[in-house]
Image 1: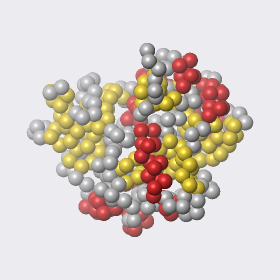
Image 2: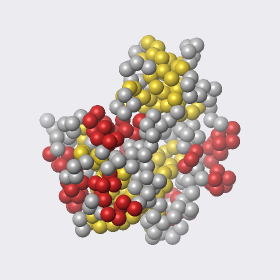
Image 3: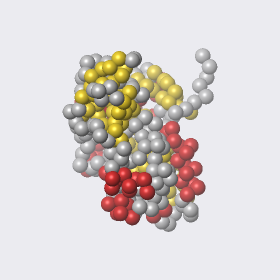
Length: 366
């Protein structure tokens, strides 16, 4: 075997020790699953707690006067109204109104803390440096990022750091965990309660081991992360949203606050505000295939009369649902919950039904 040229997170050796199956993901060596398997890891997260390594995500600080105001010129969300200690989901848009990437921005008091997707770090960080005049864009390369997710996440993290028990969804604080200064944010990408924790890289293994020592916590990989987010109706960049997709098409209008809808002033505002007023040509919907055959990305969606009306963007088996689930785009004249459609899988039509998202109720602590 040849040595991988991929990047590795501070937890790589721990993944290997725990029996993680390592795969390439966006140029990183990451665990797709552990010996207990994707299904069991998925259930572990839904019923107890699971630890995910998300250190491949980009962690960035924006420092300088007017950082929030200047960031608003790149995103359609209200950054100036974001209170200290709060986090917000948003996205970079391009001049055509497409989504360049989705991200989480936190108001850390004297700076903004931004987390961007691993696959888009090479785009997003230069984009901020090129367009945020007078703002220092600092990529944090000496920190790990782990996510502890599930209904027992509060117990797992709270045992080491009681202060996190009082946090609610989309709050962020800096606290000490085992003597290390960590940023803890109550959010995640599974639909379950939980935390993302930014840890100094030299303490990441020790603190992760402490989380995993809790009777309710087990490691989980990319496979379970994908099935969990799909059941929760959460978009994956590169699948469900990309630089051609507008936030309106993707049902992400909730992330554009009223003031920004009225004022505009962000890339692609003409298209996005036009679609808010008049509707988009297509919309993201949930789809439940009948039977057991999953519908993967790229599968054509047809109306029962045999006309193509859209395509699947994400699909697979939903362990909590107990059957296949999918998301995709259909034309605006279709897509009402309860509508029957055909999915063309290996040349044959398979009956499916359009349903409301999410497939599994999101369990955030409000």
